[in-house]
Amino acid sequence: MPFIQSKRLTPLVVAAPQRLAVLPDVPTLAEVGAPGVNRMAYYGVIGPKGMPKDVVDKVNKAVHKVLQDPAVRKRIEETGSLIVADTPEKFAAEIKAEYTAYKDVVDKQKLTMD
Image 1 (cartoon, rainbow, N blue to C red):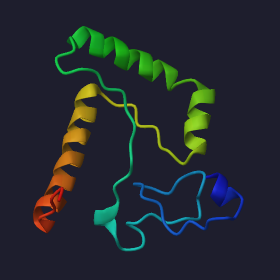
Image 2 (image 1 turned 120 degrees about the vertical axis):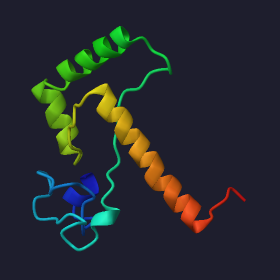
Image 3 (image 1 turned 60 degrees about the horizontal axis):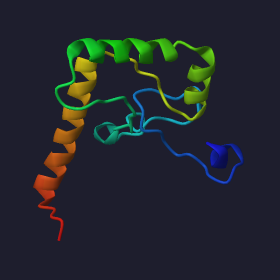
Image 4 (image 1 turned 30 degrees about the vertical axis):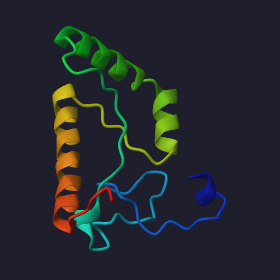
């Protein structure tokens, strides 16, 4: 964002489901005709496999509480990020969908580590 704000970079599109509040005049990929490419980066809190459900719920509740803080929300949104505080199950499904989308690209293109 600092490069955009200082006019060193000109944004053409955003990879978001809707236009961003910090870049209201910049269209989304879907708006310019490339909806299938519209995959945003995301951040989340994860723990080790098999973490007890009560611990997952406590962490999730704490994260939701922090994300209600106006200063935290403002800082996150200033970066051009969207806040999506969802359930652990929905986040797990998002991770799985993301993995599947990129695995399909790798398989289709026959990409290897070589």
